[in-house]
Image 1 (tube, rainbow, N blue to C red):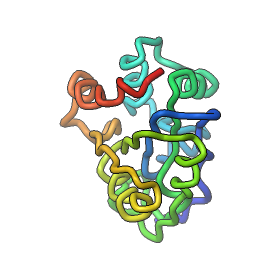
Image 2: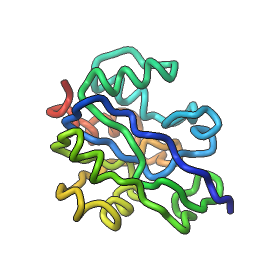
Image 3: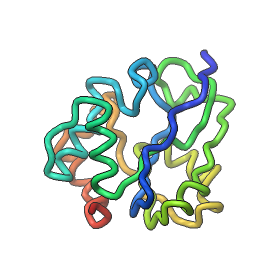
Image 4: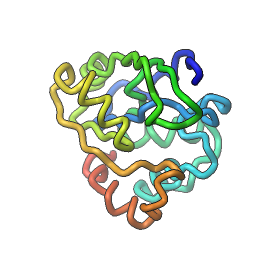
Amino acid sequence: METAEKGFPPVAGQRASALILGSWPSPKSRQQGFYYGHPQNRFWPLLARLTGEPVPLTIPEKRELILRHGLALWDTLESCTITGASDASIQDPVPNDVAALARRLGVKAVFCNGAAAWKFYQKFHRNAVGLDAVKLPSTSPANAAFNMDRLAREWAVLLPYLE
């Protein structure tokens, strides 16, 4: 078990139609210094597919993809104790102030990348935000039950919120 320091700041512009929430950055993401940094995580290829854009490779390209399409990206947790990248091992969760971000941005919909993010949203954020979150299948390589086509079908609920 390791006690992880603070997570990443949100990726957000002045406004966002939708907020995508993860649970907590993986060790690879923390090493890289940005969301979904594991090379086998399908988040960035999936978002590129949904937006019809090339897969972003650099952190500035990833940030721009989020902002250009009226999205915001953050994690449900500010800090926690975790073993490796296992969301199931999370203990001592400290929530981010998701409600304040959602209000500031005028968020109309919340999407959770995986069951752990959804669970923490329900526990810490749902009442304060006032929006039900859509639980989407995780883009993690550990979620082998979902290939890219199946992920894209499930994540297509995000399409009406893209700018």
